[in-house]
Image 1 (cartoon, rainbow, N blue to C red):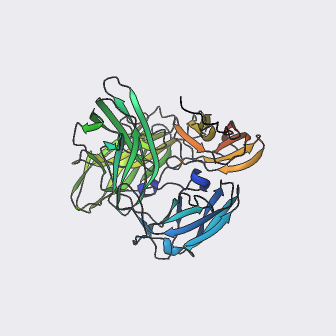
Image 2 (cartoon, helix red, strand yellow):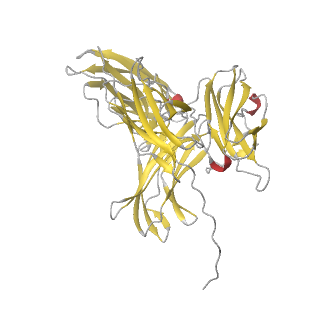
Image 3 (tube, rainbow, N blue to C red):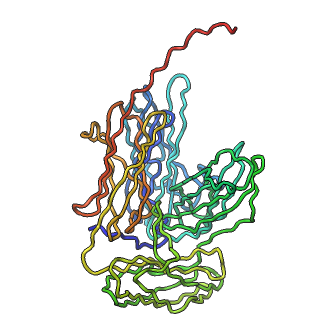
Length: 515
């Protein structure tokens, strides 16, 4: 049985999983669009990149590896800029050239060797440059980040600032600033909406996901909003870092002639400078039983910190991230020694906790013990994730539900679906997806995006989707998505779809005289 293994420290939780994606713009399709790998010092390996030629003629493709830094919050990479975490020199070559025939795929594979002294996060950038002969010989270039996590990772120290409603040309954008003030790495996400206060109507929703936040950088996540008439608007944004969800930030703006003015100076949510070891607690207990556990708290700052202790239910959002509810567990009582623990500069202390099940305890209980900076009202607490399981057999159950097929200009591009855990235990399913021609022959294998750390808590409903590849021939197909959560247990989803022949262009008519 695959049990839900959410017990990882925060520094690992903010690291995403490499996912195959596609871009079919301007002549080629790439997969993946980003490469993230966890590796060990002193090992060798290789990265591969598949390039599909969508042009009717032979195309030339060049790959070049370059160092990259991100000096601006707009995150336009500065290529060729050297830094100490550059992985470009690990590869046996920094450039490749190939020619690809029409409707064919070519795999580029480059070997690398990790230095034995390497520790932390390292990265490089692959620039893919296609070219044609004849008129308009140049196509758009693409950049594929390659990120290596070597050994134990540093926990990122993050700040999330209040959203802005900024002017971008002749339109407005929601801008959510992130800051990483550490040597750690994070994958970040912003989910939210814009609401007209006078009517309560939601005028825009946005979800910018799976973005990289490199060490010691700032980044803006942006979302366009439609033209807004004059009035007052509420912008609500929830930030995520890996599997961790931050409290939602709400801010009001007055819009006048396309300009937005905030009603307050804003704030910054900051992760408390407290390390917790271990970051998890798990036990299987009968009703009316007790168990104690000890945790080590470390103040990572140079100032005294009062660590405020809280306990709440652990809940999962539709995006897979975890948050702490203000409600306490129903049938598990967590006793804390005090509500506040004093930590000196760079200080360390140990705290004992007692977990007790009630006589009515009959199902698994997930909870969190949080530690935030009591002197900082905008502090986001570090936490211990805990689970107390019932003794005996469980009844796992996972269900998939298809959404509406998304298409662009008549071509199917994405299939959204829901993942529902309707059983009584948390699961860590293994997802796969294939495309079947006429429902029989496999013509493509797709990666399913991993939400959070891949686990699904009991009662949770996650929103996921699979991107369909470009260049499918006209005909009938079926998308088969499977989530396996046991040796013989799996949830399956079949979505039929068709690809129509490209529309024929009508010949241009004669141009008559203007009357």
